[in-house]
Length: 370
Image (cartoon, rainbow, N blue to C red; front, side, top):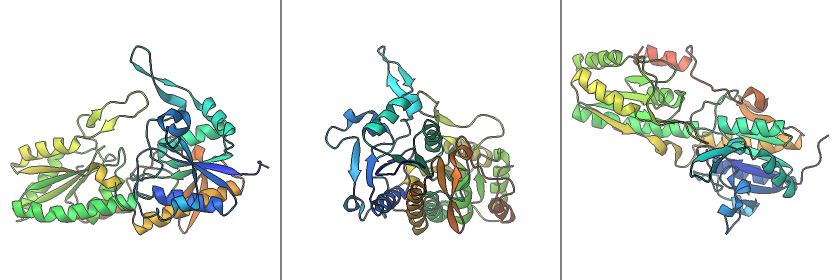
């Protein structure tokens, strides 16, 4: 049997998402109800590895009921977050000014032992879950909580943050219909999602987009141009084209703003401009671009995301109370269950080709560029 738990820590890593504060509140409250102390690590795991960055409050701070009261409806995270703090590949600055990486995982475990932290709840996406799995293999008691607006984490029906992002993106499309129709334009709307098309697909269909380009289906823009010309011929003189940031052209590479470097993955972006420019050339129509970008990450979580986050946070504490480690809480309707981190780490959930949602779009006449 594992030793009794007296103190746990919680960290939020990767990109921010609506619902993070709800997870923090749920975890702290459920831990306090068991008589456990809860500590918050700032900016992923940076707060414990670089405490000198936080001279006023420290990189690891106590979290009490009072400190998390009334935060569940707030966007962002009171702990901060980062996607550049992997302890196994921690970014370092060399003497010659170049950057490198250092494995600081042993140092991290020593810090946990020094501070009397018995277990860690790690909230994040696929990168965070991979780190959690590696820390578990090194002996740390850890439970993962799935978070990403991209909904690309495997073994869970959904992640919190996704519903909020889709709801906002759909509202944006609703607004763009009227301005596009007024000016008889093609509006190209670029959305986040990395290498998965969940946000673009769900928001695009809900928002009445006429073409949706996602990473899972290599696209030919001539097919989109044909769709636009057909709409023009039918007297529908405007079109909305949704494109995921990681959408894959049939000919040519993905659009990348910045290649992968020390401690960070490549930055996708720019596909909206490319698509609008080429569609204008192919159709002769005025094409404008709207990049929703980080607007999808902000704002208060929807009731669905808020409830999912609260359920995940309490389930993580229950898992630790039951002696579990190396697991991720996951939504499997109607309940939250536990899956092994080794089944999640390094795996991405893409839109399947037989997706009912994808088929719904095809039956509605949406063009997917194939």
